[in-house]
Image (cartoon, rainbow, N blue to C red; front, side):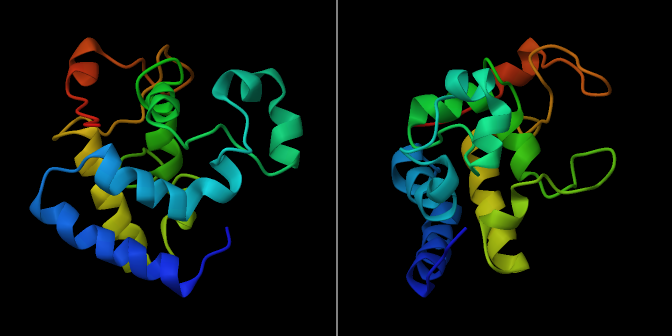
Length: 157
C-alpha cells in the first residue's frame, strides 16, 4: 500500500473528531478506507461475487474485493461474507491465536496510527460485541454469526 505524508496526516485528523461524535460511513469510514485500502480494494478491484469466482487470479494481481462503497463494505461485514472485514482488520485481540488479520498492517504506518484507525472502524461497526470474527456459517473453529450479533451492528451511513 502506497502512502503519503498527506494520507497519514489525514488518517490522524480523521481520528480526532471520530472520538467525539458518532462515526459514520460518509464522514469517517469512506475517507479512511480510501486512504488506506483503495490501492487494492478500490474501484479497479472486483466485486465480492467476481472475487469469489477467481480468488487466485485476483490475489496474484494483488486485488481483494472492492471496499469503495457502503454496499460493498456491508457484504464483508453482515452478509454474504460475514465478519470478513473484521477478521482481516482485527489487531489479534479478538482471535484465539492472537494474530492480527492479514490487512491490519495496512491500517497505518505506525502502531498508534493502526490502533487509532481500528478504534474508528470498531466504533462504526457498533457497540460492545458487534466487532466479531464470526462467519455466516460455521467453518472450522470460527462459529456462525448469531442474530444477536447481527442486531448489534450500527454501520451508520
